[in-house]
Length: 492
Image (cartoon, rainbow, N blue to C red; front, side, top):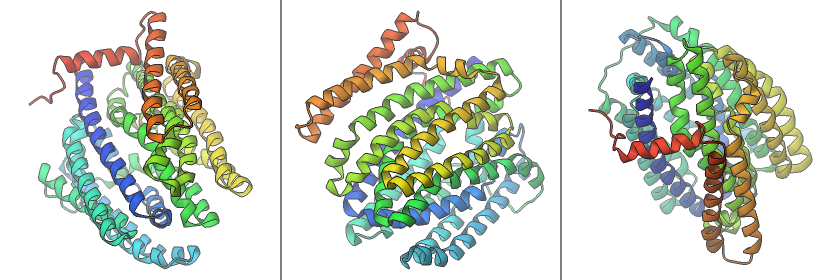
């Protein structure tokens, strides 16, 4: 157990460092492009990427996950995965090209046709990626994948910003994505030389795991993209651009903060699938860490979203600030259910995920469309808050069924983080009321430190008052000692 814990700590350190850099690059890219392009440009490309995401999710084979879950994959397993991935990429390209014309007609914008063709080509490129990259995650060695991700992000950002500076066109968003995909495929073979061959030897074995994952992934993507499709159809490309940028700004802090933990969970749960007691402990531990990481950054960003968007993006993006305020809090509380999906996958219970996502569609769709019809953008945001709360309950009940951990135990494992987040929110909100007449930069300079002090101060006091129990606070102290000893270096 200690060896696995050390590997996880090393992996978390590498992943956290990589995600911090990637996060900064992503923020710089989005803010720069938002200054150079219009909300309508973002909305136009968003429509195409939504269709791509839905098609990709519906055809998702989760072959990497199947190889991780497999106890001893052989060369033919990797070749079969590569072959199936190539066929999937070709299918995505054909579907995208075919969808370009009807979508352009439905949204009355012929520019979508060229975007769909370009994204179809990108799908073909991505299908060539090295299937043995999964070996890094199987060994809980993450720095190679992080390196590839950073190179991809740097190339994509540079290409997109240069094209936006020169042409001020939505094509900057598309070509930047294509450049990142090309570099990603090349780097996958540079870091791990491998010559894949066409094979169907183990397709049944891989599909037995990934079939339900594909259905679940497709439903989940359709579920979470339906609001953007409906908003674009009802209100147009410019409001969709505002909503998309606000959504990305709100999700970015939580996603990048929790990713170092979340990315480790599936291989860990897969390793512990035959040890129920350690699995329950690992699940509660991961849930507590994710909530402790997500609440301060998600709710904190929601509290400072208005002055941040006003200062960085300007008055043209005022609606994006409202979206970021509401969804920042939504993404923060969603951390409660983050470890449930890798838990179900690690246990091979992918059918349960499909059934859950299918049920959630019948909850979320009516709320989303009713909110849009009756309240426009504000109604949509209100509907997302309600559906998020219901979704969290559905996932924590699934976790109870899979692990035997009660809903009460899951909530109690996070109570100190919840109280500390409420203290932080009260401090920041109160200070914000007193400095509303000051410049945005001064508001941010005051509110952000106040929020950090409020959250971490309250967390520490509550931890001491509780008798220093095991939890996120202990994990943070152990990590500090771990870094001080210099054990974050990857073993040779």
